[in-house]
Image (cartoon, rainbow over all chains, first blue to last red; front, side):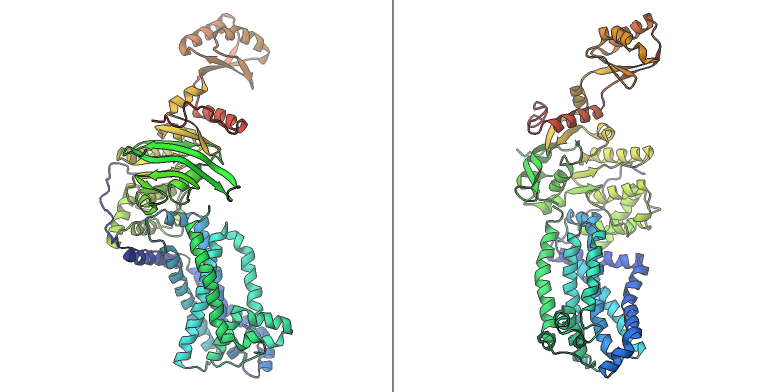
Length: 278
Length: 333
């Protein structure tokens, strides 16, 4: 190690305006999260392909029976659900990344720096939204290859993208809060298990009308169902069930549920970040 | 009072976890660290070292008390404190998934360097800490010594006024340990104040100008390493007899030269000496005259270990009182 006198030569020279700092710092953190993609490309690619694996599984297992019951193609029915599932599963990635940073002391390093307070969560948001965009593109492309032909207009497609990203943002803040609260990444295990019943008791893979009445109602009330059903409508997929009050107002709930989750978890996450690990 | 020669000042700092009736972790902690010095903070687990450092580094807010670091209030001017401090060790980590260079460029960017200057700054640090060859490898592939040097470099991106260092050489080879110590001494020569927390007494002994011993959330002893050693007591002679059966004879011959009680522990006789050399000559001459067979003979000076053991032993017994009021608290300067 060269410990001879090397005085500081390069000094901080960036802007001191808070707004410029917030932008620059958020970009720095986004870039850092994107650098992780390159270093862990295998994991990333698996995460992008995972929804397709699940979709193929259900297509093979239930495509025949369910397609018959729907009176149409199961692929057309399931694809919008898979898009909703894709953004929903982003929750796991957000929780894992946030809890890893905070348990390993990286978050503390950021908090000890004279950087913008919103940059750490802001950078996480941007990187995870980019990740979900890649994921959605992969799923959408795979659907087209499988023979899916959505019946939609440009405006409807934009609305679909908006609703999916809204659900992703809700999952982001939920994930940031849970990730900050988790003492170790391992302790997220039980919460990751919870993801599956939420996924299966929804309209993602099956018609909720085929469930027992009480279960169907719970499934229709699931935020994931609201988004899946609304996306289904907008993409011209065969419609199902829709007997319960929740299902009839799916498009309202596709905005209300994520909005509610953001309203709850955004302030919680921000305040937890400020008073981390007391 | 706060003055320009004080780098860190804690007055009556209180902190408990889990609300008002929770566990009291810092109990009226006072600490003054002079600018340009290395201050060691020692204490057993649970003494409050980490909590104290987290408060000084703005990661945690105290319940009560005043904390001034590098001339700024750690609670109300946390931004100013953050631009003047560096953290090394368990308090803050580097990103193991990134390369050494990516880490340093990122930290420089977050320390308000423009992209080009951040790259230049990272290169300066990589060269200074001998990390040039490993610069583009992921930190998780680094050896222990390299890891520590990246840690140090990350804490030094902006030549901090005050550097907080935690156990900088735990688990390192002796040679690398010397390197890290040299780097820290170098910083101090350039004017950085270092607050060092460690379990390694040798490390504190080597580096620190002053040492505060923490127990139950307050300073139980404070002074220079030699002052602290002096509080434990005299040097002593260690005599290992060939046969423990001779112990009564040894005691009889040696007690004349001892300044305290002669004791036998695990086959080794311990003889406290008030008057180092003359007592030793007398004691060994007495053993020689009596032709008592001796397997080994050594002269020992108390290490900080003894101070540590003695003070933590006392704090374990006493709950509320200062052990050495004359060395703790106000008269630290």
